[in-house]
Length: 399
Image (cartoon, rainbow, N blue to C red):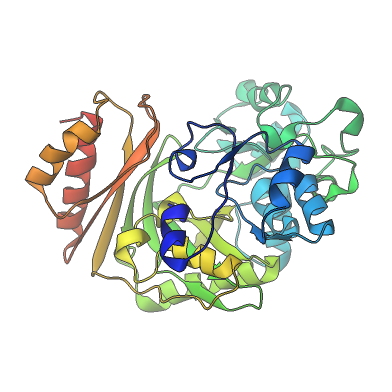
């Protein structure tokens, strides 16, 4: 989708992909296939680029620092990106900035996790500091008997940002957030092993998302606040603007997203994922520094999509307006289900609703895998949500 946005801008996009079957590799000519955790391969690819950016956060921080030392523009830079790669680093920095977060602590053992729970109440949430996504690396821990499970998970590799030889492990990576921060910034000789982050359980009534694009000089463009629906850690649906939110409250959340982007020095897209308490308080759940699933609605639903504004930002071009093209925009993800020939099902989708916008990602269909999304527009929240759900349900084989 970044490549699609780059074409009308005249930007020459090169892709470094982990395999020829990835969605982007199917459409970007001259894709380089390789291992983005291999310094030599990454250096060779980046040598031909004016600026390097990402569609995920898994490239090891130390390798990106090497690119910067060679004079290659990396946007967002590793000093910003580490806050999306390492949840312990993120929590420490946001807390220092006064950004509302759940109560949290880096814990080194099941006993320390249980001690945290005794202070804040069961259940608690345990997360790996690195490597988790779409619900992976996250546990809802309900009792001391369950407290060992997260620690058992980090005895083996969770993802590419944890790949390092034993002799290169960062000293003190498990000693607390300060140690995790130092190691993640490259001071420990390599990428740190993940640690376990304990967080209070937030009985949220809904989840929200705010996207902001930021140029190197500080110009920002912020999108309307979206309400998101997550199931099993996977985004299923977004509604924009968030229903029932007054303009003053939405402006406050947008201002907070801009404050975070400025403080971290983000260049490109920042997604701030939020949880809303029953009493209306909002806390930050996660950060992502790339075009984000909760912003896919913007492709047709905003004057300038998140993908175009990300590219404008990393190319240091003036940012585009983020106004909605309709009063209500709903995006519904298509997850792998009983229907495998998704292209063959489009005629029926459009027979029912010719106005629905469909994006298929060229992925093999597997149960629960994100294989596409649909977007609908209109004036009434329930009607637009129903239209999006009808299309995605059909493509998933639910109806």
